[in-house]
Length: 320
Image (cartoon, rainbow, N blue to C red; front, side, top):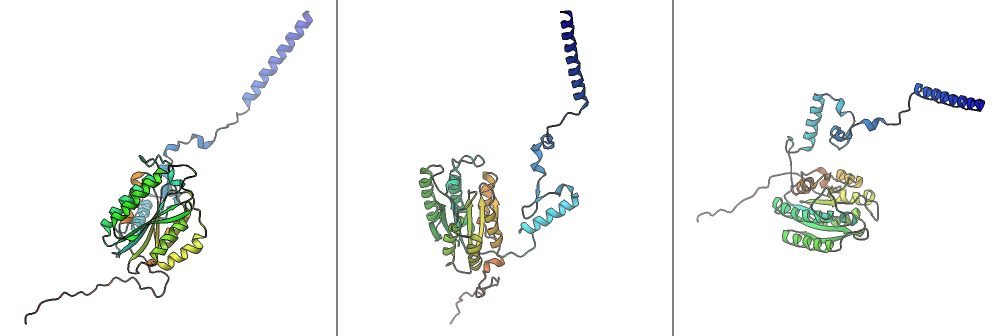
């Protein structure tokens, strides 16, 4: 019994000694760090350090520039984008022909927390389009406006080019009631087709006179476009030939095809951050944009945009 107990004690002591030796060996070896370096970074202030250039590209070495270099870049960017502060001579159209292309697809039937208090993006878009009609005719009394709706992969002309703001507002109000009554869901509204919307508006603008501007303003909530053909290969050459300017306003994220069309035709592409920013982007298109060389089109027989004074005479009564 004593021997057995002694052996038991000895084995227990040996186990304890081996356990102690194992702990000492583990203590001597460095612990493996399973954490990552990015976990220790405070991400709340990371977006404040992101800077963009004039083209919207992110600058990776912006913080490494000196204060003087940052000021020079800012002045250069303002001189290129802010036409009011530049010393360039601006020529603006008095007669504008504009089509509003509105997205009524399934993408617009979702509630966006960044755009309160509307129930859907569709409601925000149509209400803003109705306000745009008043602002457009206030800035362009001689202008013409039309509205195109895009849904179910097709484009429907809501109102043709005209000078009556009342007609456009009544049509947009009726479309708002009709579309909101359908509700939301993945099966309502279908896909958004950018090409069909631009083609419908472009065919109507093709009959507009050359002495006025031809513009298409697209307000979209979609993250993709379902088109029957190639926009850059088929639609873009026709836009350039006709001298049509395309501008886009996105409610969710930037679409590369929208930015490409805007850059190629001399338009603007913007993405809203909240309700106020969305309103500023849309209402900014009510002011006549400066005339660019792309509006002449690629037709050699098209008249060149030259600003000249026109001699006018008024009858006078002579005695006799």
